[in-house]
Length: 331
Length: 256
Image 1: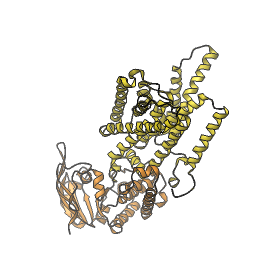
Image 2 (image 1 turned 180 degrees about the horizontal axis):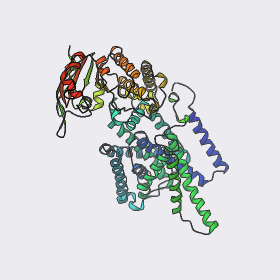
Image 3 (image 1 turned 60 degrees about the vertical axis):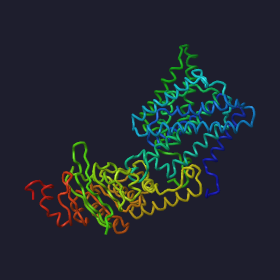
Image 4 (image 1 turned 90 degrees about the horizontal axis):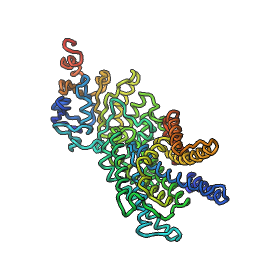
């Protein structure tokens, strides 16, 4: 890099990491909080990668969790069934990281296979196709006995800790930011803006649609692998249509095409889901009337409707926070 | 002198409708060539055929003596044919600078890896691309609009952005689809000046469709008149302007 000083995004990321570590050391952040933070970080990976497909390249994927499932099961199979790794040995961590990346690579390959035929379709048709793909993945996993079938893949070693998830999330955000704000990224944006015009200024639109899809799938696979090694289980139902639709909500709530928006939405909505549960529990205690967890989704839905009504473009619209912008692209 | 663009026996049908019929012409290098005709006479279809949006039912398109018939649009553009659209097709949510840079992307040699990891070679190329784009914007008097979101610009400037974007692909031939549509007289005068500059300064051959007679008669050096997909007249502006068949097509029988 031309200038020697560290980019501000890196500095802030390191400070934030130190702060969270410190707070959990002192005991301000308990284990429960740390779990939510970990989940939020993984959702950042999943949301930003979906945003590359839906928000940047302008395609419509309803099966993004299918790629996460591929990543989860591939990496989970390697660490749990094939190598039987234990997280107690420090030497196992590099192998775990390789397994996670392999999960991403597999997801990318699946993305390529799905992407080529389906990206000829547009709008609703593409949405239905990707929806079908997500369900196919789920049903296939349900029927492979080796990985547990409908019981899910159990006993996955708990390799995903805060540090590992944080580093992966940071790298995902930085790499995708670098891509989006490069010439290749602008070619993807051109496809979103106007496919005919993109083609007529020399952009191979098919190539960039598939590319966006494959790269999105790769990072989704990474996110899935981390999630499996955090929850210590990979279950077909975790990756069904409901989960994919939820991711889509995250992307829209944050703002189509905004990395900043996706990060904020992933944190805000993951925390919100948890706090709603807590709120409902205490409401049940105070009033004596039982508020089941299904009410959580009602309130959740209302909040989303409000966002869509009053901030149609999502929290950030298409804007990025200054800190997420590359130095030369500011202004 | 051999022709830059040469079209031989080109026809195109939409189902049973003959949109373009047995079309033949040569555009020599360095000329400003006009294609006129009433609505629905097949002008825009001709542009769509040349730029690969449609594939001709019959006939051949040669560019610099190489056949480009049936190639995908982006490949045709990369050979040196750029175009603008009758209804603007700007990348509205992107900056003016980005609009221009995207049109230079196919010259961008650095791969994906370089973009992910911001390698020095890639950054150098990005910088070069940015400078070239800014230079072009300056030539089009758009440099102080570079960082604005394109859709916020007034209509006349958007037309210029679209022409700038087409020029950014480094074409040898530019197709302008009704560049004067919706412009006021002052903007039309500027446009005519600009089209001359495109040819003289950028050394780009111009092929334009236009309804605006002042523009056509004022700058075109050769004119071809279409009606219902067939050529009814062609030649120098003075001659075509007086052709009774042309007057009839535009004004109806007895209109002349």
